[in-house]
Length: 620
Image (cartoon, rainbow, N blue to C red; front, side, top):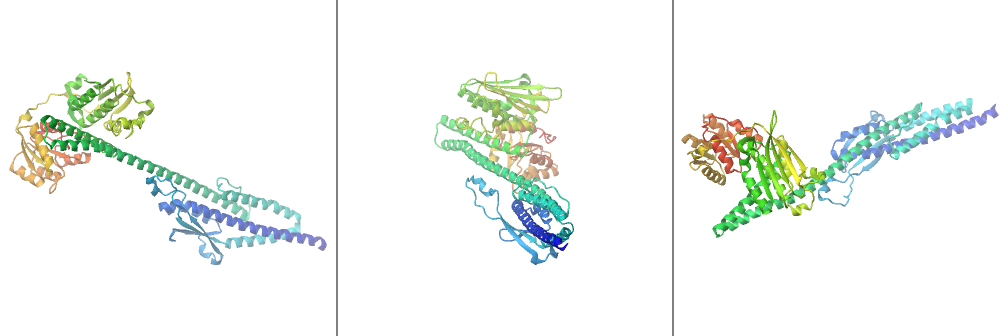
């Protein structure tokens, strides 16, 4: 038996020793491989939290890493060595310091910094280290596993002595294959394949390692997806920032040209007027200066409409006006432009519009019509431009229908969405042939939607384009007869205005609209209170922003003193907030700057004989 036992004992010793050493090495390699993989993914996952300052995003990855028995702590440092994040296991204080070794890895950004985007620099920015990851690995776990392996190997050796080859075969078939599969699985994790999972074998530390490896793979997959998502979002924001910067540059360049053109015309004409001129030349220069200033005011008005609509703060003031009267001056200007281009220009109103009034915002309607007809004349070289205005009545509502037809260059169906965008024309070459900043259809669309209407682009039967706009009318058509005898009355009007030029403009316009008016000026609110105490007035035009005492407080004091004289706000701020504040303090109506003779005349007609007995309920 001794002779027969000696080879078995020697075989058992050799096999168990080899098996024990092999498992120790495998365990050491697997532990080191898991530590390196965890460190690599910590470096990848720490980039975005360092940029954003939200270090809580590291918690899922770090907690998954700390679940590995051999990993004791994780620390994130910035470039100066300052600790940004630290997390340790619950058993950290129980680990002997001699068993702890530290692995470090520098963090470099994978996405270029956004600071260079506005310059559109095609060169790659210099990459600098943004931080450092430190991970503490404890060998206590390895030693414990090694002791367990040695104990198992000794038991296996005794088994070899008892059952020799049966035990050796069992060991070879139950332990080595799982280790090989685990090795291959960890190798796949190291190569970046985190979607696969390993089948968990029953038993001891191999099963635990396999389960831990699967959890690590799952955590790394989530971290990888999150990192990919954050990277895509950052790149999208980078692209948007580039587009916004480019659009801003192009817009500023275009606006600089468009604003300087009428400004140069106005300044030049005013300089020529200052010289000695014949009467004919004087009126010619004066007309051209007025036209340049009108173009400048329209351009600024267009830009402000775009800004107000983007902020959802476009003021709307409804009033009853005859539509032909609203558009008379505008249509006269367009008829002259059409005559210069040898175009046939036709304007038609249906009988209801010709004989009565409709309740609309005259300024916004005029702005829509101006842009649509301006585009029609601009892009039509021969043929005609026809503007049709009609009322479309329905059982529960009334609609103002504006239809403009032309025989111009037309708009292809696939380009119609583009011309509705701000600063866009069908072709970039048009900007050299046709002037303008490309806001016409955009503004018309914005205003139509705000008023509750719609705008459509169609092909014209005779070639060219047909624009159809439908706007709701808040009140049905009413009679257009209105007395104008107030313009012949000797009205007493108090103008409260701190600006000398604006005061002179208001005074001259009032005298033009009502030659018999007595206009008294007050430079601030306190002076207004004194004037009202000394004299009775039929109407007060009140500026809102003034030194000493503004228009709101002045009106509040007048109403508190029992003054019932109609007070009309006269200000350049046209927001709904200012309008509501004006009505709230006791003002009766609102008149926007810059003043026009027509709007001032309408205000005098409306309030010059009211005697303060009525408060405006103007819809906004």
